[in-house]
Image (tube, rainbow, N blue to C red; front, side):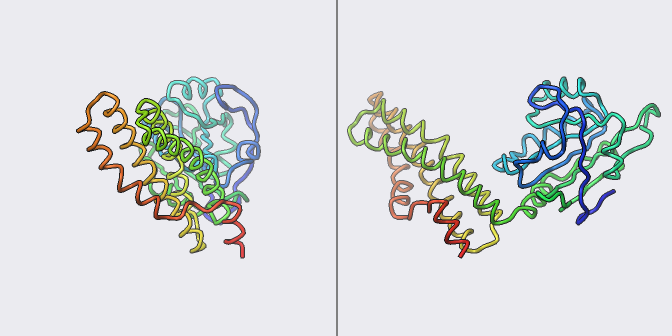
Length: 296
């Protein structure tokens, strides 16, 4: 098996991408990624394979996407991959390694499956940086053994750097600004006792602010430079408090709109401390200014 520090092989094979069967290259699948996770699995529709790939889907390698590109590989056909991806709502490409050449190049090919009929890939995970350098490698001889997702996440974070952190921060800042605009609209309507407008505006603010705090959190995890860590930490705190305040103000406005003053007052009292916190904290630094500052 290839080990950490080695260069991962490229390939060009049929694959299922966004529900379509097409011929793809490794470079095409990973062109926009800061980190590439190549996942080998024995076969589609096996219980362990389903659990592994669905776990990676749900890991929210995300808050990391699009910085992280996941690529699944097995010796099943592209048509089998398509049915498997559709059934399990897998949003990442599945590559058909029919002759086992990719698995062989990575050193994880089982020349004979347990049923004695065909070659399969060992269950394996490789975390690669943008230069295809393997930063972490795991493989199991037991086809029912699953990778440790915490270890996968740690390897992804280790393979990332300050440039990745700045890009995560940039995504967070964009989402934060979207949420902030709706939040301010909600505050204005709230002060004017326009409860319907206020509730709707605060509801609109919640999702982008939630996305922002996750992206800022990812930036903080990726960052090596202490100044970048501090900026991402402050931004994450700001987005978290605004999101929390938006949730409670939305509930308060809804209660006031129904004439339930007591409940509205309770929700508003929950929201006020979070709102006060954001008013006394610096807003997130613009990512362009952040890059200049961190690049000094």
